[in-house]
Amino acid sequence: MQQTYTFDAFEENLKLNEIERLTKNVDIHSKTISDIFLSHGLIHSSKVLDVGCGTGAMLHLFANMLPQTEFIGIDSSQDILTSVQSEQMNNVTVLQAEATRLPFEDNTFDFVYTRLVLMHNQHPEHIIQEMKRVCKPKGIIVCVDVDDETMIFYPFDEEFSELIRANVRFAKNNGTDRVIGRKLFSLYKSAGINDVKVITDTSDFTGFYDEIPFPLRLAMGREQARHLVEAQLITEEQRMDFAEKVEIFCQDPNRFYTGSFIYCIGTK
Image 1 (cartoon, rainbow, N blue to C red):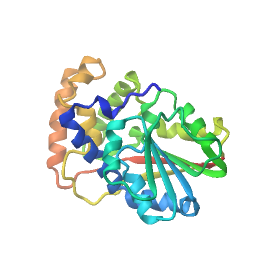
Image 2: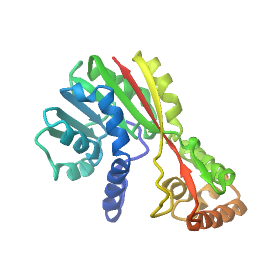
Image 3: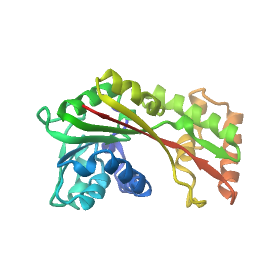
Image 4: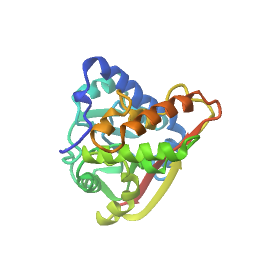
């Protein structure tokens, strides 16, 4: 499977940080995730598949809520699955497998979902087709992903939007689609999934940041956006301007930003 994110590629000293980041991402949005999933069929499901389960944060979120439901998670990285297995629950099973070749028979699961996986794969339609294949007739298929160009900032909205767009182009050139959220409806329809519904959920805002917002941190990278200059997506003058404004933004007590997660829901 052609994918641009793999946990195994992280340096050993950074893997724990990545596990913490992935787990925190689910924790922050856990109420919205659980509300949407439960109200769209998860609560009535007896067998559920998490495609690209990562740290298992979503598996454990749902398994605690629904102890009578069987949850299975797959991920391509055996290394990251060890973090799930250390917290194994009776109704959770994880195994190493590729999302484009799910090791299950047709019509196995009542509810199949994936979150923040499709953007890292060059053929997301293959994953969606596999999810449909292993889902039971009338079962539920949910894909959740991002659309970075829906982000808004204050102050420096225009400048940061330009920075985000440059990072979207950089990601695209390197195989990651950070605006895949807007494409999910079309991908579902092309896959023959029925009753397609899209929910756009903006990030919760509490008026407090404990660090630089992740979208800006991602765009700036470790070396203050030098990679974007090298790729000729921004100028050196813009890079220096962005670096200064990110610092000012983070010191502003009235700063604000929000972005969107796109939930696409359908039935087989």
